[in-house]
Length: 124
Image 1: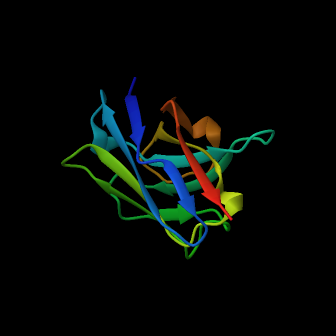
Image 2: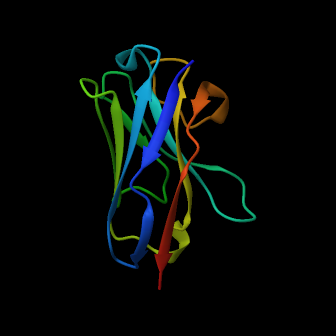
């Protein structure tokens, strides 16, 4: 099992930026992929971005492409989500997740540990 703790959420105006961090402990960090998901009020959880165990591959939801960047520092057991050009529709609770495998994935069932989430609110 992996323990995950997110940080970096907050309130930002439309067009602004935030960087989310997720610190992991437990299983060897460099052995599994990491993902970011979000859930807005009244909506289902949706995939945002994924990064492979080595960091060599990334994958984004269409809503995130060109605006968000996922990265990881395996020496620090931390994954990041840099979010630029934020829009009000990006408002949600963002959660990081640890993958069952090393490969990138957009599917919830391929992640077996979840953080508690951090709130991101984008005002218009």
